[in-house]
Picture 1: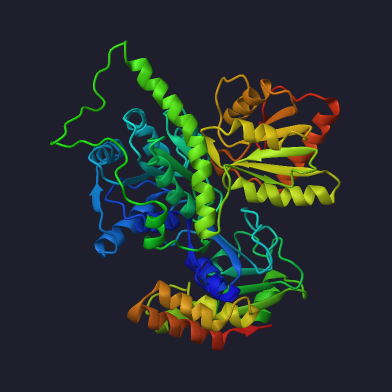
Picture 2: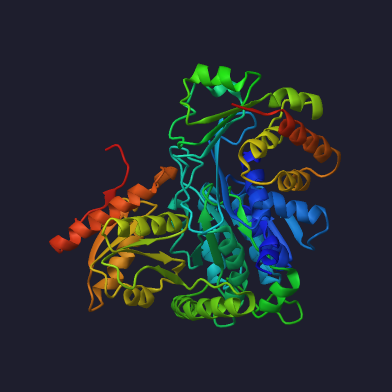
Length: 171
Length: 398
């Protein structure tokens, strides 16, 4: 949820129109949540509905890979980004992912433990996302993270973003 | 330049957009009890108060009944007040809602609309507000975080208008808006206070000039008090239009009490409120690509009901569907807004085919494609020349 919002915040900083909204069972940290972000530069006429045909799917916990079909509805030329220690090629084989989908992986949990000292991957995953997709700029993601988490907490989160930006693998 | 203007925008949910509006309006007393999905409003206002960013008396009460009672007392003493609630909270306030409007107090309350129990649902529909529609409050339904922000500011100007003096609810969709982050241009305090200056325009309790409010009233006067509320509510329509126009002049954003989208040459139209509006508009564009001349009328002001504007805007449409997000159990047709639209058209010369759709109950997802199907159904009924006579339940497993 935080990740989807920060992408929208960064997009809005770039003068784009964006909506970010969650779909959850109960408001409780750590529960499985689907969150959507719609970004456009052309119009403010965006449906307030779940995204059924995503350009980008980001999975923050690889434990969820088996449960929903994370590739459902993904567009051709789309991007799947997963927080995992596995290589993109391994993940591609495991999911039977077609060649017209780009697959990116990053060990965001490892990065978060190292930088934030907690397995909270909402910010680290964004570094990987901007590198793999260019959906928003790294500078604006960093700005958004700093605004959300002032002070020392912000610094370590920015570190997580930068590290994931360097370490993400696309294949 | 355009880029600079856009840069001024913050990314806010409708909940936070409400809190920023209340901050700009220099509200004196806030009393509220947190309830999902409205909680962030109270949280943010508490944060503003704790940081000294607002100079308001923050009363954390033990229930919504007390929340509204507290702001009634403060408003009667001449304070500018605010509260917020949703769902069961609004239901618990119910008897006090009538007292606020009967005492003619300019209270503003935001509602992150949510379904009512039982069974328990924390998700969105309009059951809560529909349940409160006859309490004498002015009621807006907004459809973006920006509009929610702007409407809270407009609400004070309308409520405190000497011809009105009625409380106002600003309702927006729980989760679908309350938790959705989107761009909002925030109005600053000096601008907001120039638009809605702090001035006690209503009779207030003052020990030096004592008056009595809300006292027992015998049959020879009670009726007149109620009739004055009728007159005030009629005045509120003009006041809301004026407030919106002036807002547009000062801030460059106005919305109208109803909004038309592609209605000029439409054969069929849907009447929607709140968050459905954008999705329905996207569907109208899509339906037109498939040969259905579709349009959307968005009802922004629900009380007072802008009857004449609706009839005028739909004068050339052959079939009109009303999408209700609440159920009026046992009603002639179960869509509450449908019945009012039907009532409005009954006394007009122009009588389009009318169809009632119920959708989004307990936040059941309604997609663009579902709205396209509604437009197509309207076209079918237009050809037959009459509606189905009962509500169509979109997406239910019957």
